[in-house]
Amino acid sequence: MKILVPLNNAELLQKYIDAGADEFYIGFHDLQWSEKFGKYADINRMSGFGMNANRYSFEEILRIAKRIKINNKSVFITLNANTYSEEQIDYILREYVPGFLETNVDGVIVSDLALAKKMLNLGVNPVASTMCSIYNSDIGNYYVANGVQRIILPRDISLAEIESISQNIYNSKIEVFFMRNGCVFSDGYCLGMHRPECGATCGMIRNHSRNIITNKSDFKSKHDIAVNNKIYDRLFHNEACAMCALYRMQKMGVYSLKIVGRADNPLSVCQDIITTKKNIKIAENAKNETEYLERMIYPFDSLEKCNMGLSCYYPEIRF
Image (cartoon, rainbow, N blue to C red; front, side, top):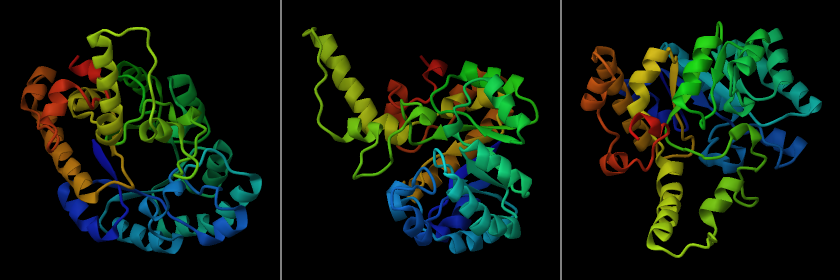
């Protein structure tokens, strides 16, 4: 199993590699793009976070990609805005694809199938983003038939669904969300913009005052509402974790575990890499899932949250 991590600080590249990272994904910003198409025309899904998520220019990420390749690691570039206009696709093919080919990037994460097919025709490997909403093997095989050889499954599906898709999709690597940045919404059907001034649906729920209206006034109902708010506000959205599911994912044949967080604290991401790498070794040597769960290492500073099930990507393992 591979460990895929975001890279938003090139100074930490070697630290991430030493920790056990196998693959990297990077976004970028382009002032010419913004001038041409407007500031609300996203290059990728995280454009609204500005430099926090897309620190480097296109030229800079190509240089970083070369460093990654020199270290015999894989690198993927994000171009996963929901859709692009024909003019925007032409711009991508003209301005970005030659650089991808020269640098020999391993793939470009895309949501727009028209862009994926055109990039494939030019020799660039498209990766189906979570925005493609591949919730079953029929959808997955449609993308495979159109040349996609790697699929990122949605973060809001169950382990049983992951297993079914993995067993019934042919000639494609499966990537799953594994650590950080959980979301209860379906990525591919989310029309909100990840921008502070606009407010994505998830951000509005997390950051604005709200009152849950109920006709119940008993203690348990009030308690359940308070716990739900705490989980979504403070825990699940920021610290989602699938460490308990690693053994089962390994048996399913999942190819890559995605640590999310292009705008997150890089030192926390590094700790996630270390813990994931150790647990992969434990899973490889465990006789069964029960042994793995007994021996696994909990995420840094998360034992209490894990024991209470407050940040589980896949709670069906424990609960």
